[in-house]
Amino acid sequence: MKIAIASDHAGYELKESIKKILSNFHIVDFGADSAESMDYPDTGFQAAEAVANDTCDRGIVICGSGIGMSIVANKVQGIRAALCQTKEFAVLSRKHNNANVLALSGRFISKYLAKEIIQVWLNTKFDGGRHKRRIDKITKYENK
Image (tube, rainbow, N blue to C red):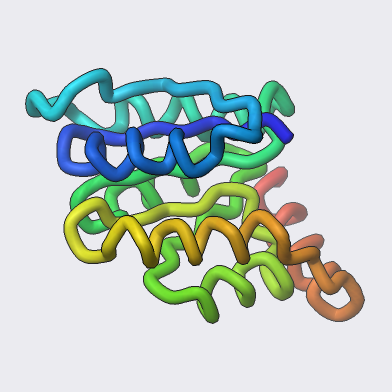
């Protein structure tokens, strides 16, 4: 699996930690390249675009709260980004919403919790069924 990853300065440390956790995957790092202040849309759009155009299978975006990166990713057509603060949210984001981008908070969750969230998010399959019908409605609206 090929995973796009991006952060801003506030998510840089967690991003670097996540890259080590995901050493068995092919990681495409869109930045940030340091903890020096930068604007999260500059890296978030690139990572989301890589998922939307199928260059990468999934994406992980990180900023201070996770909110900004979530908003940025969800502006890209075809992206369903979910800000997850718990393992349970991560599971539901995949089972019910088929989230293809995971947004995380660099300031409000531990590296240990981030690892657990990522592991369940990557290993949880989409349930389909009634949930597919709902995703199809979102896609139809997005494409009009």
